[in-house]
Picture 1 (cartoon, rainbow, N blue to C red):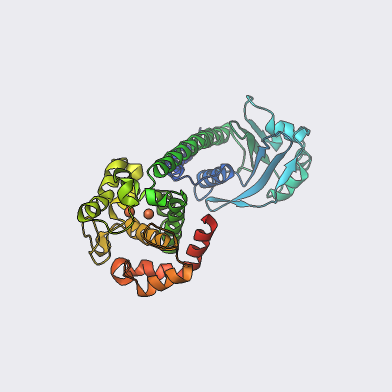
Picture 2 (cartoon, rainbow, N blue to C red; picture 1 turned 60 degrees about the horizontal axis):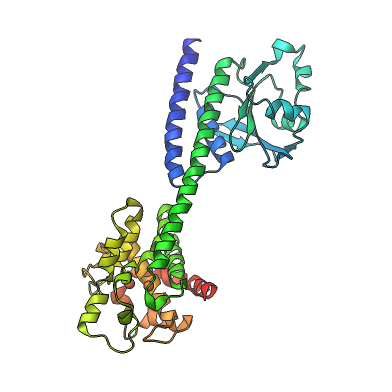
Length: 391
Ligand SMILES: [Fe+2]
Ligand SMILES: [Fe+2]
């Protein structure tokens, strides 16, 4: 291998490692799909300045039931793969699809026209017309690399500068292997994530406060909190996390006797003190898992007030964790709309009046973050819809 090719190979391997690392991080945040991952990685590693790569790529996958092969042609452009064709469907039994898709276990195929064909023109006859039409023509060489695993398929890379080499095939194959393992890993991460969310929901349901026992309150609070966070322009990770963490705001009430939670009439000082301990109990129940950090923040701070008049620690303003401020507003709106032992349910319009002018329990200016309150008034119709959809 020439020195130049060695340097390119080293650079491309470094790119692949860096992208693998980034992608692993993205996988932990759950944002990836099969085709997107191939497009992203192939584009960055093979495209761009100083990279040796093909001019076009046909990326094709076999349908789950084996009835079709579908793919698209992309062109390499400045470190990215740009789509150049509509979806192309191939009959998996056609000889063309056979040679692309059904060569599992065989060596990847490297073909340069001059090695086996009389002319570039006769070489073109080898290709599917839709693929040929979308590739930057004429085709002078190609490499076929099989994709194995959950969604089998093939990467067909066209028109390397000069000749397509075995070195090019090695690079392509190592990329296919890395992407394939990332996709397998991502499925496992997704399954683990599902199990985690299920556990969180089970915990929230099991601990649901006696006075809110329908299961719907906690689900609505998740939704309001997610809507507020999204409309404040907060990062998607935060929006997703608060959308399942908010439901755990009252897990600490499991340690408060139901006779106190459901008591009609006034509570004595001791009973009030006990109720006011539920944020501290909640924080303890949620433990020290990093995955439950936001849930913990919510549990401990969802009764703090913006002016420092809340409990348990009388935190003030931005010292109150943002997730706690958001969940507080969501929780108060839902409590106003719902029946409680001490009150009748109120309409959305009545709730809006309370959020504007206050009542004996709620003092909006003193209790809520002003930016959040403003966001609430912008999206109050979404709150009404969420309440109705779970009522
Ligand atoms: Fe609470
Ligand atoms: Fe609540």
